[in-house]
Length: 240
Image 1 (cartoon, rainbow, N blue to C red):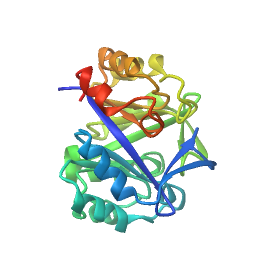
Image 2: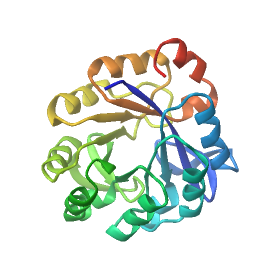
Image 3: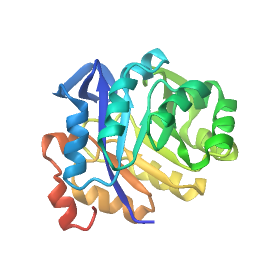
Image 4: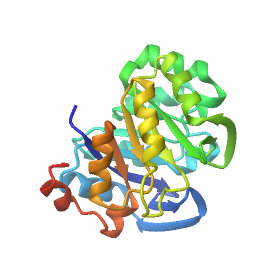
């Protein structure tokens, strides 16, 4: 499968924001209109988007479904969405809103049976997020430590039927440093399902290296919003 570069649109309080290392008090607002931002990335050549309801990730309920629905109605490219998905009803709501794929995070730790049931119902339309700080998976909007390692959770989720994993090193996220290549490579070589990597990507060569490691794709946020990486640059490198 062709390597995918996936722009991130994080929504908090109805706005498009980026956090630093997942810390809600270190927020940068990039736009008052997340739908317009999503349309921009589509127009510039993105083949899919990664959307997170940051409010929902904290509260456990969908807080920005209206915006996500408008996004799905406005775009022609597929969207994956996470944040606030803690039961089958919310998962169904998001899929019925036109989102291609749901991403389960906290639910994977607290209610793994939900992951199994969702995978049984929706197959490849369900992915699991492995949001790790110093190797430990975090939950509830990255605010609570699960006590479980990313690799252990990954293997457990694959055994439950998960067909795709989204791995984020929280300590790299929003820092414009570099991804955690070592952990990413370990995951890719161990789990046997596609892995999308996020966190710390700041240069196009990071994407090339992740592709060479065998990752299915990479989610990029702050690097695109600040211009550290541009969509034309990615096209010139054959990454779009």
